[in-house]
Amino acid sequence: MTTLDLCSLYTTLTEEERIVWQTARDFVTRDFLPVVREHHRAGTFPLQLVPQLGALGFLGATMPERYGGSAANARVHGLIMQELERGDTGLRSFASVQSSLVMYPIFRFGSDAQKDRWLPKLAAGDSVGCFGLTEPDFGSNPAGLRTRAERVASGYRLNGTKMWITNGSQADLAIIWAKLDGVIGGFIVERGTPGFAARPIAGKLSLRASDTAELSLSDCDIPETNRLPLANGLKAPLSCLTEARYGIAWGAVGSALATFHCALDYAKERIQFGHPIARYQLIQQRLTEMASDITHAQLLAFRLAELKDAGRAHHAVVSLAKRNNVRMALQTARRARSILGASGIVDDYPIMRHLMNLESVYTYEGTHDIHTLIIGQHLTGLNAITP
Image (cartoon, rainbow, N blue to C red; front, side, top):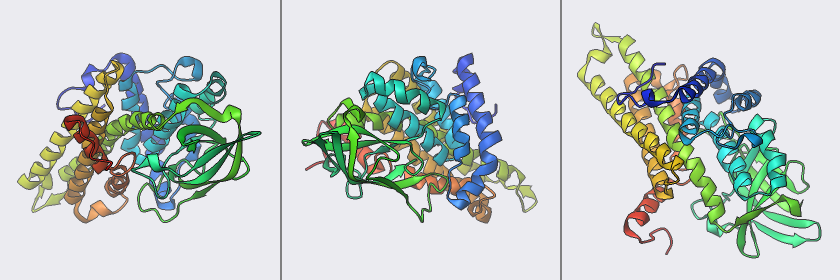
């Protein structure tokens, strides 16, 4: 496997980790890259690949085997996210939401019955889930969410709206976060529940090969058994976001590798003034900056995996990795686009697709600025986010 590895990080993989990495690379190259351009153009997600994602163990890989996972370590999960985003952010986002934002809250906060019912189906790709936290007026301030749950004779009645929900139109279940008696809690809302509707968001110029929806809940009644019994307070959804942000830090490396290798190959083949442009100093400077930045991000991701497996991955360090690596990937894509010149803007090459996707990743699951303030609070002990 050829990939940028100036610090020989990938040589430290165990045989099992290398097999998973190779399997993910092969899947993306063989099954996803040939179809992604048409899905990007059409604004659709290749839902037909979901059972294959499940069969390969890419959904909920860190879950216990009894629930369909493989009890994989953090590095394996990261490598999967890296390779999926090497294909497209939409592919990684699907798997990240399914694993970290749907399976994880059910596993951590759900009842045994909820785990037994949903986790194996989600791991296999037989069911699709989504995570409903963000609202039209509350993104960076989830504590202010307006979706409400009230107790009724049959269980709970939900009312509210969720926005920018990945997998929302395709989901068989949604993890909805709502305030019950003023306290944020988690609720499982199944497709087809009266009062529950999902509407695809049209006109996206980013994450086009991804399903993004608005969810509405109007007097939506769910049974008592659909409440996540251990999810009480804002820390519950925030812990889910920390899990997802870990995967984003690795995914950004995959996106950067895709754009870097595209630019490197192009520079070696593109002839100007009688020579490949890779011969010229300014092109080599750009490639060197890209390779340097990617290597720093790889080192951060590999170290974060070690901390996570040791139970020492503080949420501020996860924010550091998400913030750094996404910024790096965005800058790498811009440099790669400049090397390709006009060719960089057409979808014969993946660069502009990655560049547009990264504009969303820069602001989702915690904007770049919010992560700046999370790290700032960790360093100073002073909260600059809220008044």
